[in-house]
Image 1 (cartoon, rainbow, N blue to C red):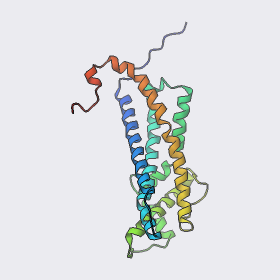
Image 2 (spheres, helix red, strand yellow):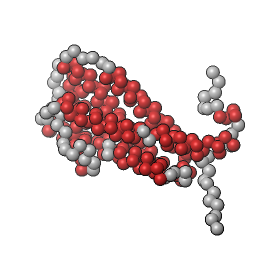
Image 3 (cartoon, rainbow, N blue to C red):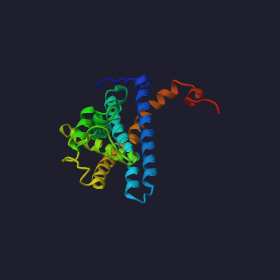
Image 4 (cartoon, rainbow, N blue to C red):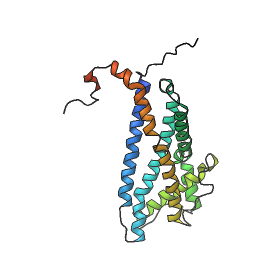
Length: 229
């Protein structure tokens, strides 16, 4: 005789926390996407202006890399939340593990650029390009985007021991525009893969917890966090 297996309640802080992280990341990803649209619509008349334009692009790339690491941690948290995994199908596990694997590739890069900038990576960059002492420049606004791009290059190259994303070292000074495009294309490809997992996972979580939450709350309690006009 098959025993009836009682489902764990979804009315837990852990389930709410998973949704909070998902909401945060979805809107963070939307903000980055909107920022990129603004950047891409800008027109530059000279090469110097174009390089200056990269200052926003490089911070956007860094923010995307940081977000990928956050997605990786979210997928790990999700897999540990039994209240939700009890509703997972084989396809759900495939979606979660694919997002986890895809985002993990960028975690090592994020560790060099994220919460702090790895000092050793910066020293290596300065040594490689013969930057010594103080910087003397008549246009730091143009030079800083180049330094940011070189930092991204070194972080990606330094992370190859953990995750060899491109199969070679990047060389920005040999082909700046070409190498930037290589990074952007791969990052956008992985970004789309990760972003596509949110819709089915949000739907699953909502369906798993909706009925139980409705039975445990009054209509007034289902109006959201912000009340009134």
